[in-house]
Amino acid sequence: MKYTANYLLALVATVVVVGIVLVLILLMQLTLPPTVDRTAERRKAGLRQPKRRHKAALEIASLGTEAGPFLHELCAALAEEQAALQSRLATRVALIKALGAIGPAALDAVPDLLRSLASREWEEKRTAATALLAIDPKGEPIRSRLIEMKRAM
Image (cartoon, rainbow, N blue to C red; front, side):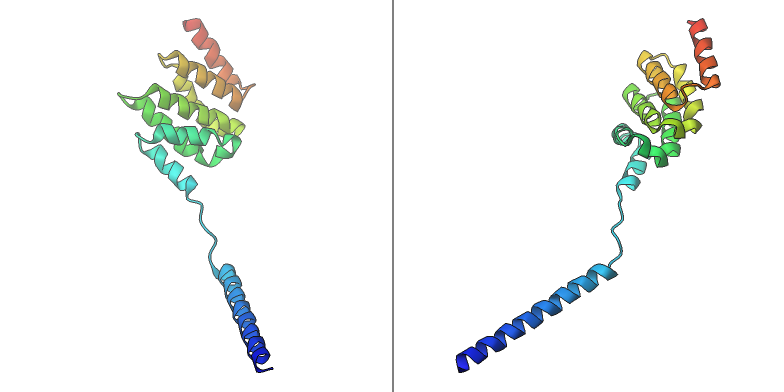
């Protein structure tokens, strides 16, 4: 009988301790601040660094229309790449693809993309034209610029 009473007392104590631990865990979950997604910050920082810009642009392009928050950083990075003396074609193309992936929300990027149409590199021109059509397929400013470039060829 004594053995059974000690056993029951230990069992009750164990259940109480486990219950207290579970309540504490639940309270911690409720009071902890939500985790911050640092992926967006990392991608924006990558666009500001020329050595990491290509990889960041590819990651952002893979987001498609959800890449809208990166529009201004993409435009700034593309303008910087266009102005640089030693700019990589692959980086410019990746930035242009990311802008095109945003779609109609990237209307602010049209001037930068039109500058890319004047590039000497065929791949950059083709990618810029594709991005412009993805942004505004019926846009008159884009159409007139394309006609003007075709006449110049």
